[in-house]
Image (cartoon, rainbow over all chains, first blue to last red; front, side):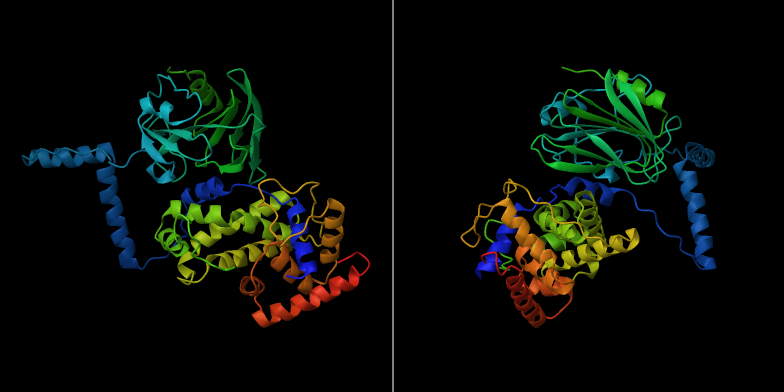
Length: 251
Length: 191
């Protein structure tokens, strides 16, 4: 290496390079459901798809199942239907599943648990190692009262993770989103409706993160005692605030 | 320099790429961890804005994951990824119509977390760094890029050739011409 080459390499060390940990944002985007493009099928395939759709609807809906069960029962056959086996939110890549009771022991912050009688306990709880200190995600499966978000089977996703206390801010991907400042449990927070967004924050080890919302729903986010809370939901602000107000320290 | 089998590395990169290709997001996340710093820096050299550089790098990783089945197994991952970063940055610049290039921001102290200066580098102050970087920035594009990739990012000649899409012989000749020009420009400033 010549002196000049060494000099340039040394100058590189003084450049204020951007520094960010992209892992969580990239993972979030890759785990988010992808909209498939429309494919034109030949006529026979369209017919086959239609038949499959009818069969699937009959099996997937309670009244459809009941109709099949009634017909078979007339023929002297008793039918039972198994519940879906895949845990709620399994496609969202939220980490490993943990029990609600032990979730608090796997993170370095004080976990809050919801006590909202309308929702009951979450259908699944996940723990992920990123950001530093860990994150806990609680998932409620969609049902008649709770519409599903996008192509998922999830109605509400509530996440908690630690930040350094430095500011957390929101970065929107598109400009049509509505952002509203709100007070959540006495803390400043925001409510966002209408489009994908990222949270940008510094984790407990001082690393920058961009975390993309997993569901294409509405978001209530706030910071409380150094922990960022985010509720992604298909419900209204009032419902989200009610869930937030029900949060308790289980210890 | 381009050794891909560094001891102590948790998993062989070829294995990581192959696992990621079969849908293992954890393996891809490890590739992001290993290469994100270089990817963001290359993006910054091209778009000259911190936030935009991070977005470019992030988009490039997402595109890389989706294009993994087009990646030639066994070949090095970094130059392939950096090519995607370069294309992504070029698309941004085209769509934003931004032509003006901002100077690289220089910190007063070496950026914390960077490796300790190796015997290959010398200690310089912010002022001198600014002069050197301004001289590099003042070079015509084809020389500026080759010098930036080789000495600011520390890419090998082979990697530089892949990212720029030119032969390694061209990288060598451009580098030596670029350095000559720099010496002329900085004639007075003890190099």
